[in-house]
Length: 209
Image (cartoon, rainbow, N blue to C red; front, side):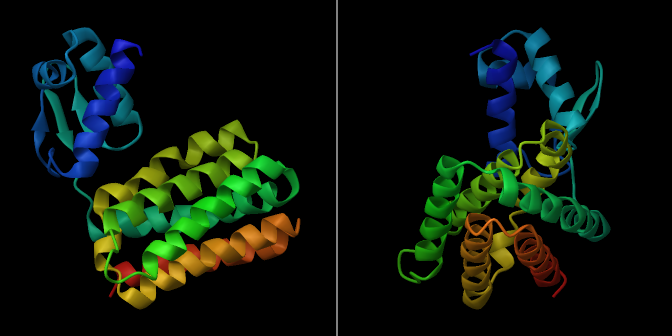
């Protein structure tokens, strides 16, 4: 793994895990020490995170972890509601059998996790959810679309949106994923796009409660 990729992964995961708190400062030296790399790849990693909206970076001054306001989080879901249904529709006509199978497996795992109140792990649900949305956009076979939604898909993980979900919300979200897979497997772009839009808007409404 390249040094810049290692630094990027370490800091990105630290932001997701909460080790680097919103509005907290991260210096190039801190990144270099945490990842075991020199300051040059540390600087490049911070620039990449800045381009994805995860930090605000100023050369020679370090970076500050993005703090999401209510308005900013609402904007994220508005953009997702515009872009992800398009990706779901494309996936319905372009996804390979292997990609559909992988999406189905992720959806089933999330559904099982959501329906087990005893062993339920919200962090695992969030990770499965993120993987599902990322792999679905990959199945759309549009590199431009994937680049456009990459940062948007990270935002819910960082904002830890699933902590706001009730049991009913978690089960509904998982059921949406299963239906989206059924629509893609049926090669029905309108069905896939419709369910995806409903899925994103339901998540947005949950955060507005």
